[in-house]
Image 1 (cartoon, rainbow, N blue to C red):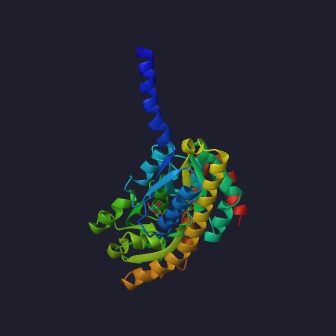
Image 2: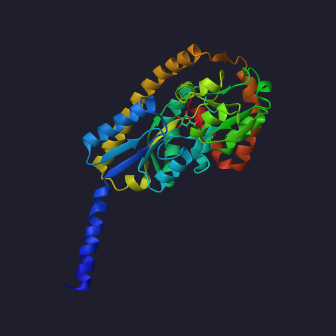
Image 3: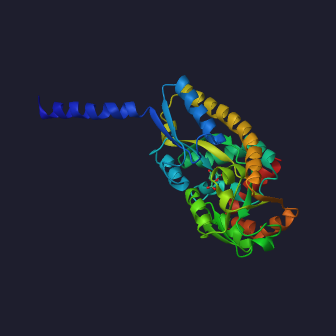
Length: 322
Ligand code: GTR
């Protein structure tokens, strides 16, 4: 055989497994098995595997890396899909930062109404251009502060507290306006940092406060509800574009079905988690005067709008979607 044809055979031998492997999708999830998001992702995987030629596998518990790293991995198709909070998305896709502005939504219903309508399309377009196709929006409730020192009833109680935040400068600014010191840190490092006193507290919803065991080492949970950040089930744009239309429809349907499941399970888990942490001794307090926290956020909005004047219209669209 001539060298040229030998090279041809070798090329086919290399190409065949590559083509076959393109049908295997690997997905990232930070939460443990049994968490509402994980159960919903398992359902998504099962439905896609049953209704299309794709073969999906999802890895729970953040074993494939931290969230900011995983977002990059999906963007460059090292991974094919992921279930992400929109908080750490902001540094990469600036439009999505609007969702991380404190008190941007008046409640979870407002968030869903906006994200399930035209407002959601604004974020979807910005994300798709940056390598991520959001197929459905998951619920992450609202986030509140918790710490090992004292109940928070007014901004004065935040003063001097070292608080972990997700990886986004907006959250550093948010905590600074309350007089605290924010440390961006990967989710998986928070438990140990709380335990050893590297930080005094953090902020999250009940299910994550509970599932991570943070309640064991930071027993004061104060309901500030300062962030309501949706989550997405996202597919890599590069993987998505390889699909034919019928497969795209089936994958999108499975994603929307999984979001239905997630939202139902989420509502139940919020109650269960609150009951569990309180039974374990956490002290939960309602913050009566949330306006005091909200008012402190004016400079966060001012500097955000000064840096991103175009995004004022997205904020307006959210307000109009109430
Ligand atoms: C959870 C969220 C995770 C992750 C985590 C965090 O509520 O579901 O995706 O963002 O918070 O604080 O890092």
